[in-house]
Length: 63
Image 1 (cartoon, one colour):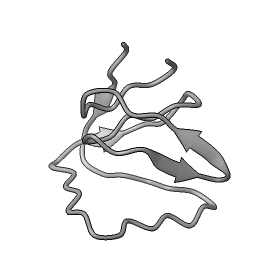
Image 2 (tube, rainbow, N blue to C red; image 1 turned 180 degrees about the horizontal axis):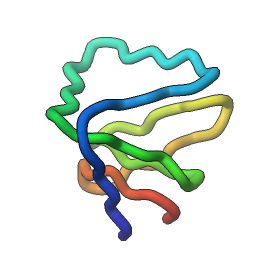
Image 3 (cartoon, rainbow, N blue to C red; image 1 turned 135 degrees about the horizontal axis):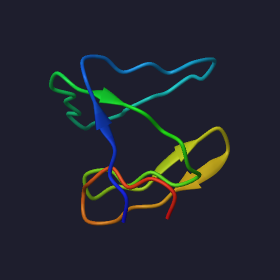
């Protein structure tokens, strides 16, 4: 599992993202999504028609 974090903001470009019924917190870090799969806090996410798979609640890129 590869985790990548960066410094101060989160940018989503050209996508609509909806988080429903969950609290999601980014604290003072850049987060860069470079692979197909994102794991997130015990939940599966769907993004741009692809399933973003879950793995133990950390941001895992390129599984």
